[in-house]
Image (spheres, rainbow, N blue to C red):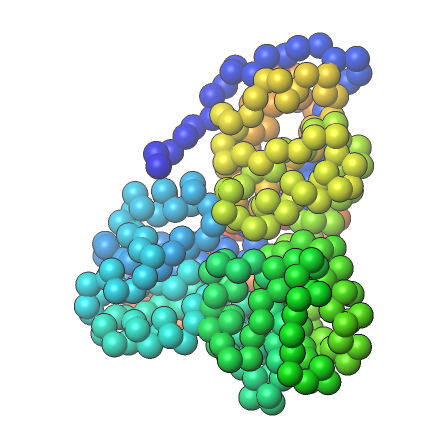
Length: 346
C-alpha cells in the first residue's frame, strides 16, 4: 500500500455555534516496545543489508510497514516463506516456541523484537503451566500475541475472547486456575471478564503483575478524559491494531458524541465535523507522531487551529535493542541501543 500524504485544504472551515478547538491526548503514539521493534528492523537492514525478512507485521500500522518495505524489509506470514539461512525479525507481538523451532530448522538468523512486556506474559504462562495450573488467557483468538502466548503452554491454555465466553468455560480443577491477558486489551473489558471469571471460579489466581501494557492503559486513561469534552474523537491507527480500535470504543463509552479511526488524515470526512466545536485527537501505540501532525494540520484547515494538550501521565520507559543490534557497523554502542528515538510528545 503506497504512502498516503496529508491533503491540505481538503477540509472546509464551516461555522459552528461555539469556538473550535482540538484536545490532544497525551500520552499517545509510539510506546517503548513499538519503538524498539521498528528500530530493530531499521538496524537489521543497516547491519545485514536488504532484504531482511519480518514474520507478520512488525507492529500493527500500515504506514510503518510501508516505510520499512521501502527500506528493504520483506514481510511474510510464516518462516517457511523465508529462504534458508536468511535474516528474520520476530515482531513485537511475539511468537510461540513452535515458530522459533521452525526458524531454527531452516537455519534462519533470528532477531527477536518481541516487546519485553509480552515476553513477561510468556514467562508467566510457562511458569503456571509447569505448576500444572489451567490458564485462562483473556484475548482475541487469532491475534499474533495470543497465538504466541498460548503456544508457550498449549495444553494448559483456554482463550477467553470476551466476558460472554465465561459461562462456557470448563476446567478440570477450579482450585488451580489463573488468568493472564493480551497486553493491548481494553482495561475495563478485561476487568469485567476477570470479575465474571471469579464469580465462577472463586479461587481464580491473578498474575503476579498486571498484564495490560502500561502504554495501553495510559492511552485509554487519556482518551477517557478527552472524551468527556469532545463532540468528536479521531483516533489515528490501523484497523488491525487492537489498542487503536479499543481507543475508539473507550472514547464512545466515556462521553464522546462520535468517534472514528483513520490511518491517515486524508480519510477524515467533512461531514464528521458538522456542528463540531471540540475534536479529541489521539493515536494508537504503534502510530508515528508525523501522522498525528498531518491530522492536526488538516483540522487546522477546517478552523480547528487551537490545540490544547490533555496530559494524564508521563512515560519514560525505554527498552534495550536485541543484543545483536546494540553496536553500530564500527562496533561502537549505537546511541539508540538503550532508548530508541526521542518521544517528546509523550
